[in-house]
Every structure is written in structure tokens, then in C-alpha cells.
Length: 149
Image (cartoon, rainbow, N blue to C red; front, side):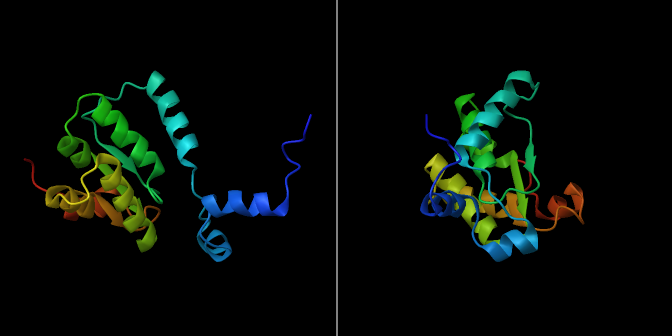
């Protein structure tokens, strides 16, 4: 039986490329991404023991490129929440601007609404760049919240 840890350098680099953007970002910000399959798996397991409802607000204070928020979005839509309400009830923050942009793109693409202005506005308001270590959720999001429908 092959040892799963016995992989070549090329395989290690390929796996790491999916989890990191650069060695300096890992070193400076501790940035390592959660693989999408793992994010989906963990979210599904959490939902089995959670009392959360699709209309509840979900906040990811270190959203990275949005893999966990993608799982949340899919769950909300699969549980009969409208796409608009799903987007209104998902909040994400990340320290780095390119991660915020990647997260926004991923959510829009997942829902198939990349070209719909309302959804572009919602992700711009709800997926933001900020420091979740130094700021509270209220400090991060209250100034950016959209009025109710």
C-alpha cells in the first residue's frame, strides 16, 4: 500500500498552490485557504447540529476567497431562501483586497448573477476589506449596511 505522505515535490507544490497565494503572504498574514471540498464538508456537518435558519445572518470574519461563504450561499438557496435574501444575509471580511474581490466574484458566479447590478451592489456592501481582529462586527459592517428591502 502506498504511503499517502510519500508524494513528490511537484505534487506538494500543486497542492500548496491551491491553499496559498505566496510564501510571503503565509509568512506575513498567516494566509492559508480552506479547500472548497473541506469547507463544504465542514459546513454540512455543522448544519446537522446547528439551529441556524436560512434567513439568519452568517458572518465570516476571515472569508479569504469565499469557500465557506459559497457553502453558506448554496445552503441558503437550497433551503428556499431567495437569492436576494441569501446575499443580504451573508457578510464577509478579509484583510486583503484581492481576496475580497475573489470572494465577491465566487459568490456572484455561484449564484449565476455576475451581471445583475443588485447582486453586485450587495456583495460590494457585504463582502468588505477590513481587520476583524482590531474591529468588531458592528464597526466593520454598520457603516456599510444596506437599508431593508
